[in-house]
Image (tube, rainbow, N blue to C red; front, side):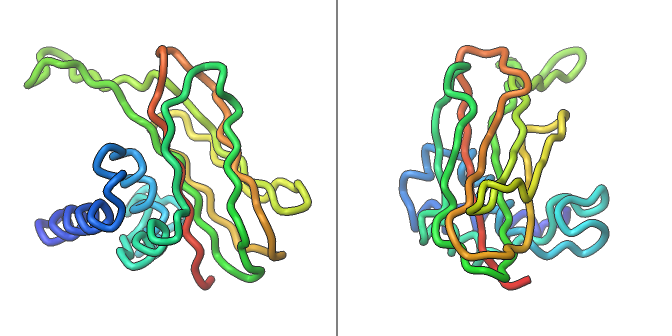
Length: 184
């Protein structure tokens, strides 16, 4: 990442927090909104690529996500799953990108000594359903603290994003979900 990219990501995060002050307490939601707005992959798969990750950030789409309240942030426990979110009023023929994000839990010592250890205490999966209850997208990676789903809507209406636990080892976890709507 060059310096300009890092600066634009920080500026985008600051602008999102300025628009919605609750985000200052929810970095997971900022991450989810920025990743939901990263719809321009430069190379590889459109959802997630091994060369450019989640894609190029489009701050206007992330801002639209926050401005239109297309985000949630919760502290969840083992019994809260599955966690269902309603993606309201999505028109047909649009690209929807849904991101769930949560924390990793690095050790308190800085700098970390010995083997760098940044463990994930949770492994969540993301499943999205259309207004008829048909599954339209699944994201089920195991080695990161986010899931990304992307699909083009075939019908208008309320979709559902369901976060399910595959593994949950802590007492609680901070979980955020955000979604963007754009032209395909």
